[in-house]
Length: 111
Length: 129
Image (cartoon, rainbow over all chains, first blue to last red; front, side, top):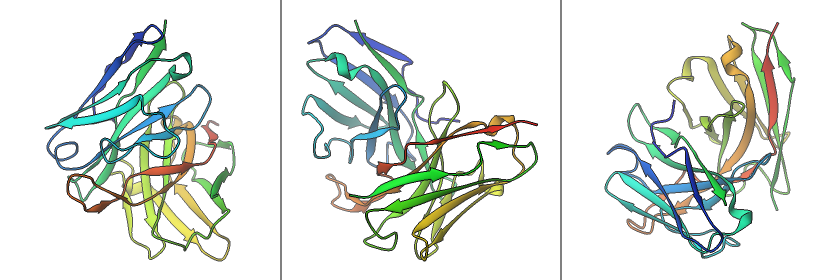
């Protein structure tokens, strides 16, 4: 079961800014960096953001991440049709000898 | 460029053991400092981290699955494996293998893991009699 909570859906028109929230606790987001994954339909997830706000090579700079306390956010500015996908936050959880946890996932729809 | 490929039975009977292998190509499983991980995703649902292992044997497992899971590495074959025992229909999912790479935390400057930067394409496993 997921311990990081995300809204099930978000949407926007092309060019708009969309923000996805990820709520956790002191043992995960509050203590560790946050990553974000993008999963296009029928594909494996792809690392989109690491270390809370860093983009791997090749990820457009319209994707950005941030964190405050026990919550994190992913922002997509200048939304494009190819951004329609599922997005998952992730963080290490220091409780119970350590374990990886994912968010519940957010489906982004480009209207 | 490292690539991962999952393989194994697509159908497993209830109460039996699910066994999958992830073959690593384009690089050695012992090179650098990576953990090798398994993640699964039931149809239409979210991602669930199963566990990971380092080449030295250091491992971490999802507490909810720990009693049934074993991850192992075979350096001679450049592959790692997942065994999940006493399966039920709830274990039906797409299973992904992934490489977990160290990254530097920009806030603390410490290196940390849980960054799955290379993924296999996934393999569907159905638990049914």
